[in-house]
Amino acid sequence: MAGQRVRTRFAPSPTGYLHVGGLRTALYNYLFAKKMNGDFVIRIEDTDQSRRVEDAEKNLISSLEWAGIVADESPVRGGNYGPYVQSQRLSIYRDYCMQLLEERNAYYCFSTAEELEENRQLQLKQGLQPKYNRKWLPEEMGGNMPSSEVRKKMEEGAPYVVRMKVPDYVSVWFEDLIRGPIEFDSATIDDQVLMKSDGFPTYHFASVIDDHLMEFTHIIRGEEWLPSMPKHLLLYEFFGWEPPKFAHLPLLLNADRSKLSKRQGDVAVEDYIRKGFSSEAIVNFVALLGWNEGEGSEQEVFSMNELIQKFSLERVGRAGAVFNVEKLNWLEKQYIKTRPVAQIVSNIKPLLLEELKGRPFEMPEPLITSDAYLGKVVDLMRERVNYEHEFVTFSSYFFFEPESYEPEAVQKRWTSEIPALLQEFATVLESCGEFTAESIEEALKAFVVPKGLKPALLIHPLRIVASGVSFGPSLYHMLEVLGKETVLRRIVRGIDRIGQGS
Image (cartoon, rainbow, N blue to C red; front, side, top):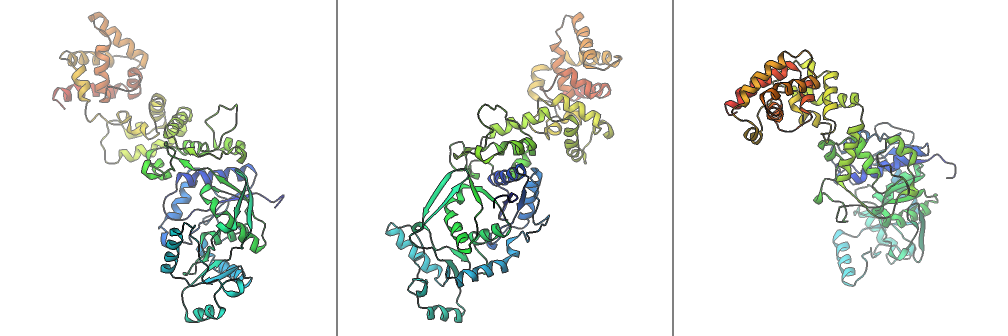
């Protein structure tokens, strides 16, 4: 394997959504492969057909590509080591299973589900670790079952599975790239099923065969697969194959340090996409769940290219990583603050066009969907939104007339003298040559001071009629972006509707 081109893989089962833990596994495999100028591959492990979900494979790959994790080889992109879907490789597994049977490293098992459960319960009562009792291990392999009985069952067409024969009194050892040396006693290893009665291989069997045939050099996966390592290593030994290098990632944890689960919050990548998180923030956040750049570094915001350059398995910890949503929210804000205006405009324009469908708006559509106008909105609201979609939803008054006026603000700020003052001030605004934040502010002060009034008396009502709410960016800059014609119209409309109690 020395000098071989680095190849890693992400091998999800098409059983539903992409878990954030799966995204992290895929990301670390991708980063490592790209750092080493190698290949990243997606393989679909669908040997458990009962759990297959329609369109799950498509959704998994699209979620990864949304995150910028694009495979060099996959069921979609193809490659020289396909097929990349295990249900399309059944003949390969059957051939290798037959090899194990012929070499007496595997045997046929006809035990029924009822017999297996009865044996399991008996072992539990005896305080033993449940394992298959080797009832069908043939005499020639050290068992008690006559070969004639096995042949009889085969001739009868009885359903069977194929089990691996685990050697007795051996230890299985390997060097984990994250955890160091790990050793297992074969006494703790069950004679696992390799081929199921439906003719499909188990995950363990198919995974080892495919990892070898697809020439993966490194297997990077979650620590939940550690107990399976001795089974996999024995298969490599049976076939005479050199195992790849293994790295087992720490668990993702809830705030209470329990294993991350849907009971305590969202765990699907799609959930975070729907909430409006960007791919940059999600990838950055997930990368830091177990990995850090090292002591002395205070950098927390990384681009994908920076992650590729700086990632190393040596900096992945062993301890579980806490999934801190507050950190994710913070990262999203950092990206919004620094993302180029043109990119945000490009991202939010489709959202605005969707909002415009079938909804009345006061300004010409070519104006409010123009890059120039949207750019002004972005500049003004960048510090106030948490997600990109809020440039449209949280700031809807830049595109639509207020449908209502905040009742608490009206009650607090709308006195009997306000309508007349606003009407008079509208005349002042109409005569303004320039309609800029500075000229509007100067006009307001020049209007109220001679009357012995404070600017705040009109600032709040102006905000209410212009936006419908009592909060937002600088009033003067907001009015400048809206434009003179829109502001004057909203003053008249607001006075009328608030006066009618709307």
